[in-house]
Length: 239
Ligand SMILES: OB(O)c1ccc2cc[nH]c2c1
Image 1 (tube, rainbow, N blue to C red):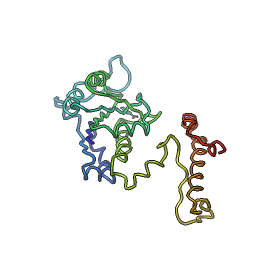
Image 2: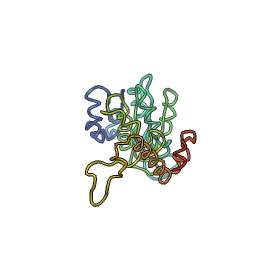
Image 3: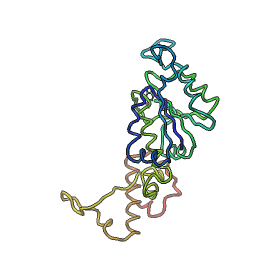
Image 4: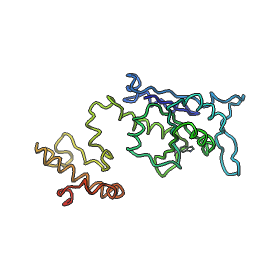
C-alpha cells in the first residue's frame, strides 16, 4: 500500500517510523512518504494561510499550495482522506475499506480548516473521504492521521503476527470483545473466571460470546441495536 501525507508539521509523523508500522515500512508492506505543504509555497514567508472570507476568528489554509501539492502527490488511482471535525465518523469498517486501496493521500488541515474549494476541486479527480475520529476537535489533522494509519496498517497482510486476533477483537463483528486475562490465576484477591481455566473450549467460547454481548449492550447500545438479530442464537437470547 502506498500512502502520502501532506502537512505543515511533517515531524509529527515520527511515530509512524516505530513499532509495527515502522516494520511494515521496512518490509515494504507500507510505502509511506510525508510531504511538507510549504514545499508548494512560493513567497518568501512560505505562507499557507490567510484570513477567512466573511470574517470570523482564526485563519483558513490557502487553496493554491494545496492544489499544487495534490496535483504533485495524488496521481491516478489515489483516494484523498481528509481528517476533519465535520467528517463522517471513522469506523473499523472504514479501516478495512481504506486498507484495501492501493494509494491513500492524507491532507492534514490546520487553523480553521482548508479552503473548501480544495476539497471540491479534488473531488472532481478522485474519491475524497472527510473523516472524523469523534465528537471532539484537535489542533489539526496530524494526530487523526496517525490513528487512522495504525488502524489501517494492522489490517495489512503479514503485519499482525496472528491474523486470528483480527477476528475476535472489538468491532470486528460489530460487538465489543470479552474481558481478557493472563497469569497469575489470582491477583490481589481477584481470580480469573474458572471457565477460562477449564480447558472446555465450547464453554469458553460461549462465555466469551455472552460477555461480549453483555458488554456491548451495557457500553454501546448503539452497536447492540445495530447488531443483526439473525446473528443471535438461542443461547445468546438467554443472556
Ligand atoms: O479534530 B480533527 O480531526 C481536526 C482535523 C483537521 C483540523 C483542522 C483544524 N482543526 C482540525 C481538527
